Image 1 (cartoon, rainbow, N blue to C red):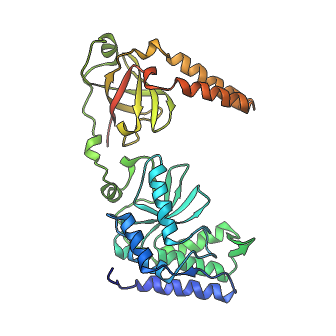
Image 2 (cartoon, helix red, strand yellow):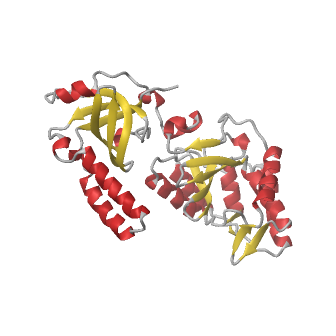
Image 3 (cartoon, rainbow, N blue to C red):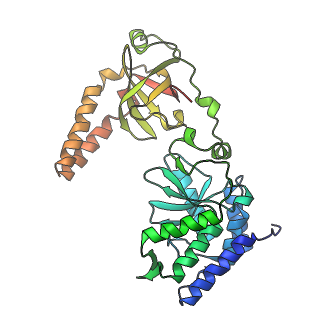
Length: 352
C-alpha cells in the first residue's frame, strides 16, 4: 500500500507519550506492526477504511502498556476482536473498531467512518449494556491525556498492569484535551444505543448498510381478533400492537402481542427483526403468517408465564440449582410451535 502522510498532531502526541513513559522508566510498548500486518487489517475491515491515524500508531508501536484500557494487543489481535464482536454481538456495529479493552465488557473503539480531519474519535462501548459513549475526540487527544496522566502519576503501573489512580482528575484531563482537539463532527451525538440500528447516527447507518426506509411502518391490514378468527388465512397479514410478553433471545424469541381486539403469540427469528425493535413493551408492526398447528394447543402463554415465574422465584430465593433446572425446562417450551404465528418482518409502529 502506498505510504500516506502521518497526521502531525498524532505524531507529536505519540512522541509525547513515549517520552512520558521513559521519564518514569515505565514499560514501553511492543515494536510496530509490519506493512503486511497493517494491510491484513485494512483488508479485514474493508469496505470500511482503516484510518491513517490507526496505521500511524500501529506502525510506530503496538500494545502500549502504561495506558488506560490496559489490554491493547497487536493490530492483528485487534482485528480478531473486531471480527468476534461483529459475529457475536446482539446487533453488529462494524464501524466501531476495538483498539483497547478492560476484559470483555468495556471496549475502547475507533470510529472507522470519521472524516480524516477528525483524527479518529474514540468511543467507549459497553458490550453488555449496549451503549457507546464518545470519550476522546481523537487518538491524539487520548495520547496527550495519557502522557499527562503518566507524568503526574495518575496513570500508574500496579501489579503488572496500568491503572487510573483517581477517576475524577483523569476525567478533567481528558475533557481539557478533548476541548483542545475539538472538531466539528457531523454525528452530533456523544451517546448511542448500539443495540438499536434506527438510533445510530446516519453516517454509521450508511456504512453498516442499514436501510431506514425498510423500517417505515405501512399500516395494519387486519386486527388480531380477525386474524385469529379466520384460521384458514394463508396469506401474510400485518398487525400492529404492543409486546406485553417476551421469552427467548434476539436470535429467536416468542412474544405476546396485544392490540385493542385481542392477543396473539408470535415467533420472531432474529433475521426478521434487523432493526431490533421487537422488545418488551415496544409498539410494533408485524408481518405475520399463521402457523399450521395452533400454538395455543401446544403451549399456552399462561404455561410459559408460570415457568418464567418459577425460574424467578427460585433465583430470588437463592435456589440456583432449582432456577437452573426450571430454566432448562422453560427453554424446551420455546419453539415456533409454541406460537400462533411466525413473524416475517418486524417494524416500529411509529417513526419520527
